[in-house]
Image (cartoon, rainbow, N blue to C red):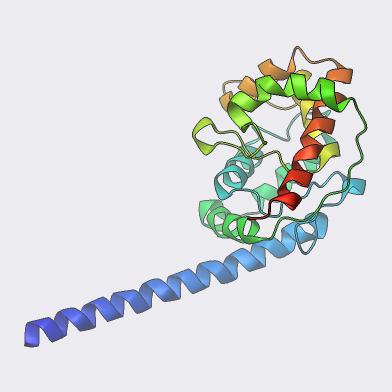
Length: 216
């Protein structure tokens, strides 16, 4: 009886300790996100004027990888990547992976916001081009963590267009050894014309309307 009581008390004590650590991590994540919100908005809605995309609801694994890439200089260190060069020093202010782990939870928990369409291209042609993208990102742009492919549905279209441009011209993933996953995207974007990019992003915009018609 004494042993059982002692074991129960130990379990309760450990649970309380874990709860305390979790609460502290959540508080730290909220604190770190305040820094992010200066550019990305209080709700992670983004600000196209300064090149800050919507980040609300992005998967934690993707946000973590990008923050680590910015922090290491694997991303955001190219002189032609003005927005990325702002993120590079910001990511380095984070206090190691603990801060990153804390803030990605906050970002992933934010409700996805509705982004406005700013790109006008040929949707049907874009649908044809997207068939290649769908092998990794999914037929409805839902993403696939196993393939390191983030969701595209609902993303800021101007940001997607900019990133395709950056991948094509090796502004993003400029060092394949440091960003091998990005290098795969650079190879995919290499064969796209400016018109192809406009068209495929216009098609990706249609996914948000499918989401609205079929809410979870």
